[in-house]
Image 1 (tube, rainbow over the protein chains, first blue to last red):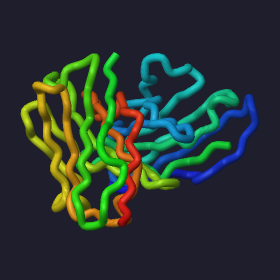
Image 2 (cartoon, chains in turn purple, brown; image 1 turned 180 degrees about the vertical axis):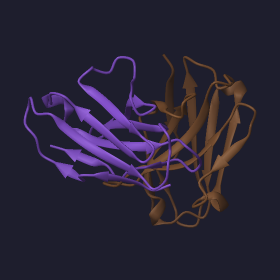
Image 3 (cartoon, chains in turn cyan, purple; image 1 turned 30 degrees about the horizontal axis):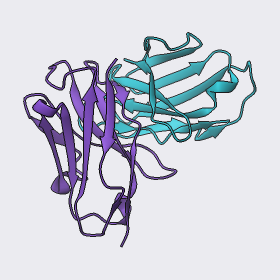
Length: 104
Length: 119
């Protein structure tokens, strides 16, 4: 299953609403997760099951979608949100990730 | 709070075997709620799932690497390991050991281990 994220990079300002999309090459129901990776660090789980917020993750992060089309949103961008964001499907093996969206 | 820590050589010669170990603390590798995974990331590139091991010893691998990968589990040491044979420069990457939870999410990650393949 191929995961296609867009855009590959974007620039935004503090307080902006930011949206990233992820499209699967086939129906994956809601088996979709989102991660945040800061430079030199391991990825961090933000959203699982397409829309469930991981414990401890700020509520400005959200996810939606099912089937093949998914959306990740930051409602009000904070300076510490500068990172690369990845979607990942867990519908079947092998698990695959999107190519990443670099947020500046 | 579970913690994962990778260890192993940072430099491997071409055609040799890359070996890494992940030590799990604050949790049990015997817990059948979880799978234990390896994921890698070449510099400046995206994430690639390598494979996983279940507490029963059952393994699954990415078809793109299957012929060269072995993942194993040592419950007595609370560790799981990765072996990747016949390495080339294309295998140079940061290797992460990662726990997968019930809905398929990778919820706990090691800090990563950079492995460089070079003579």
